[in-house]
Length: 83
Image (cartoon, rainbow, N blue to C red; front, side, top):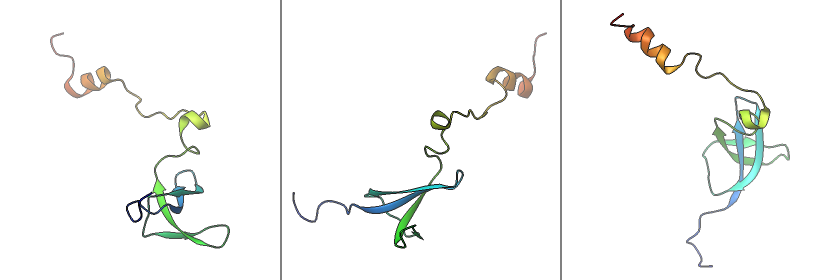
């Protein structure tokens, strides 16, 4: 491999705040924010919105994102005209 053309591949903590879940892995991504891990060392931390701890596919829990259908929203906003 050529030297000095590849990004640094270091340990990074990915944290899902919504599920209170974090895991340590290696990545080329980095952050200025740091966190002290269970082994006592300090690692960069990257906050993610969704992980295996909060994703419906992995948890088996469905989240309701939209109670109304698109047609119902349209009629609610503009009403049924012509009847």
